[in-house]
Image 1 (tube, rainbow, N blue to C red):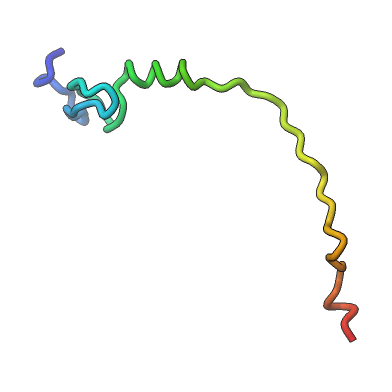
Image 2 (cartoon, rainbow, N blue to C red):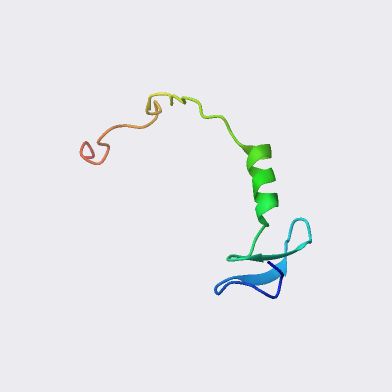
Length: 68
C-alpha cells in the first residue's frame, strides 16, 4: 500500500517519534514505535497492600458535637 492509497478514515503524517511517513487512523507513534514502547516499558503486576488508616492524635472525633 502506498502513501497515496490511504483507506478512508486514515491520514498521512510524520511519526512524532521516528520521523518516518506513515498512514494511520490516529495521530501518534507509528505501529512499530508502539510495539517497541510496549516491550520497553511493559510493567509487571504486583500485589500492593496499603497501610490501615490511623487518625492523627491531634484530631478529635466529633469536635463539633462536643463544643460548648
